[in-house]
Length: 224
Image (tube, rainbow, N blue to C red; front, side):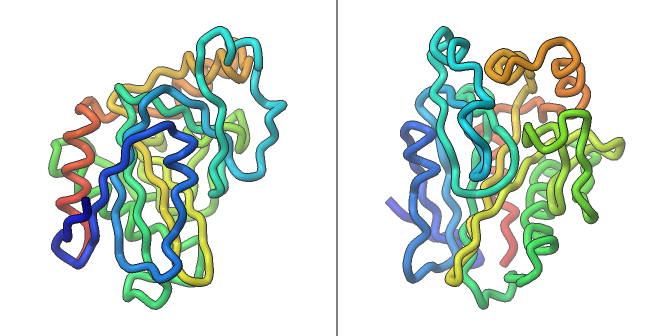
């Protein structure tokens, strides 16, 4: 079922395995759309250029965590249905919010999340407006580095991760935030050890609100 929000955003709510949700295609004739995505089981999501050899296969089998891939760039993301607020935004080329510059393109998305977090009393939050800032793990883990348009605390801890997939017709901005941040699943599945554990614990912060509350706040603050 699709409903229309202010600003002409077509809202879809999709539930299923993380791999299937990531594989949801951008429409051939896209319009403004926002997809609220709910994974039915935990998953470790690799970025489009990352190899399967990054993952400890024995740990994945032991924990029952699916390892899937998305077509957007960036580092590994852990999806936990209990703690992950996941919202994707589809913007057609030529929309007033469109920007051909990939570095600037997600700025308005981050600003919408910034407003939503303020509405929830979470903050202060800052939209990163500069070059990618990599932590000790480089670009391995999405929430261990900060890219343009993503949302952080004033001291640089990541709150909202944003990746994007672009076609000639549209851009799909894939956004996630955690109600609470637990680096342990990522540490175990990637075999990172104590140094990686410390790096991820310091790099990210949860918002302290349930995923459904976070999602609804984002929907209220999409631009016209």
